Each structure stands twice: as C-alpha cells, then as structure tokens.
Image (cartoon, rainbow, N blue to C red; front, side, top):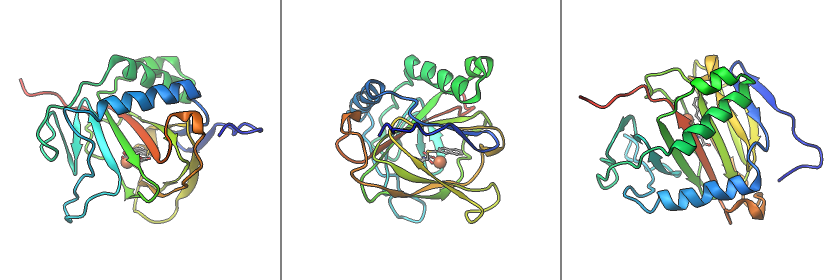
Length: 221
Ligand code: MD3
Ligand code: FE
C-alpha cells in the first residue's frame, strides 16, 4: 500500500538493499499477468517436495532453469518433465534496472545477466523456512520482487538458521537485492499477512515473489 509517508530505502546488511515501492501498480499487474501465462505450462506451478518427503507450502514455477530441491535442470523432472520456459529478455532488462537502482551503479546493473527466475506463490498460510540459496555457481546478486499481500521476511546471518536475524516487512511493489556478503545468508518467510495487498496490484489474495538469479550453469555441449 503506498504510504502517506514513503518508506525509505534501506540497507539491511552489506549488499542487501530494500527499495520500497519500486514497481508501480501497472508494473505489478503486468507481472501478475505474465505469471498467469507462465503457469499455463509446459511446466505447472507446483509445491516442490523436499528430501524429507514433505511438500513445501509455497508453489513455484521457474523460467530459464528449473529448480528442484536441490539442483537446477532444463527439464522439470519432478513436475511432469516438460522443458522450462525461457527467461524473457524484458525480465533480464528489469533485473539490470533493479540492480542498477538498488546499488546506485549503472555499470554493475548493465553487467548483471540473470539466467533464471523462480516465481513463488504464497497463499495466506504458506511459509518458507530459513535456508540458503546455494545451488547457483555464481555469487552474483539475487533480485527479489514482491507482489500482493505483505509478508514478514527474515534476513539472517551466513552461519546458521538462528539469531542474529532482522525481520523486515515486504510489501507489494518492493524490490530487494541481495549481493556481496549477503548473497549466501540464511533467509525465510515466516508469515504472510492476508488482506494487506492493494486491490489494484492484480492479485486478489496471496503473495507472489519473483527472484532473478545467475545460475552460472551452462548446457552440456
Ligand atoms: C537472500 N524466496 O526463492 S525472497 C527463494 O519471498 C526465496 O519467496 C523468498 O527465498 C520469497 O529462494 C524470499 C528474498 C530472497 C531471495 C533469495 C535470496 C532473499 C535472498 C538469496 C540469497 C540471499
Ligand atoms: Fe531463498
């Protein structure tokens, strides 16, 4: 929700920059519409199954590279076997602009070349436990875009799942970039706050998070 007093941009830790309200409502609706297209296939949105046998409560669809616990592939071997959709060039360009804006550095933004996106959907009860993203063979930043209901995002440390951590509310339209010393920090989403989204963001309920990543992977040749 756009505030009477704008929330300031904030550096939460080294390399971790939150830019509130980075996406306007038109851009949010456009991304929601794009997500509606991507989940039509060839790979369905699904709750990934963890090695424990438990399904995640978050539902995910990927672009560029398919992620499953805990590897990337070009085919969705745990979700029907379809070939993952390409990462569209307009989303690559959005990622470059995101990095440039968050770090205030046009060169670093221009050099950012994401090759994968994970689109996570949270219903009102979904959560994501504390984890590190370490399947990528690159230390390039992760770009996160939030749309829909506000969540509590927990940003931890690089050593363990516990304290110290910082809880931050992520609202619809917020950009968060995680690079440098923050790239391999533990993080999670302990809570979604139902009914908090701007009705004009394109989502009636729930929360979408789009992350852009550099996998550092190459196809075999
Ligand atoms: C910090 N997603 O997809 S976004 C994930 O809101 C993931 O869906 C959460 O954690 C979500 O892996 C959090 C913020 C985020 C994403 C990736 C990171 C923070 C990160 C990677 C490294 C460090
Ligand atoms: Fe993550």
